[in-house]
Length: 212
Image 1 (tube, helix red, strand yellow):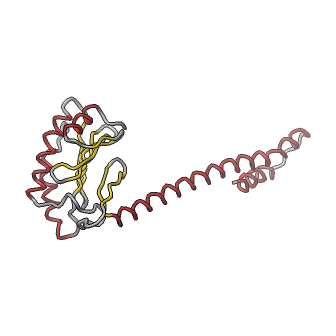
Image 2 (tube, helix red, strand yellow):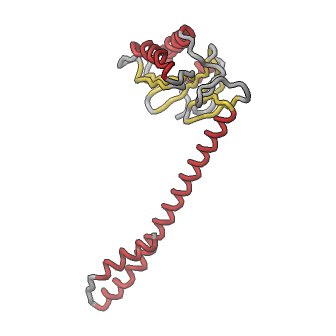
Image 3 (cartoon, one colour):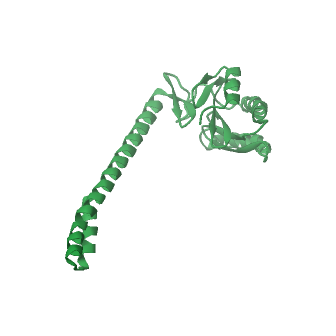
């Protein structure tokens, strides 16, 4: 989905970079993304709370957001070690709700001393060398160069595999159709001379299978 007019205006207020399907940038030391998915407007904030030792802070972030989840306020939210995604129900006051929640959320993350900024979204370690920004789905995330390149290679391999499978399925379908057509030729011959032979059904199926 393309960005709504309201999201674009808010992105400009926050001085975010705007793409066709998302807006992203750093606000108060945290990388955020704005985008639309289905019937909800979504906000993603990247941070780093990796490992069991950070479980308490993840719980505290969860407890902070939970009271906002009401039928007319939030659709829902999802927290993991690398950030939080919040879905706002679309409606007349949706941008007002987002403007209210984002500053409060960022202030709470700062109060809890949750790392943001120059932290890798894959391994959770501080980025000391080259930084990579990558769009994953509709979110833009920050990675160190090693994790970013590894993730990019993985995504490219998945795309190539998907294309190969799609091409194979298309060839298989066309082959099966051609095989079935070849196998049906004897039916035409037998029908023309007035015979009925049960094994021809098996022959058509066998030809279709071979064609695939």
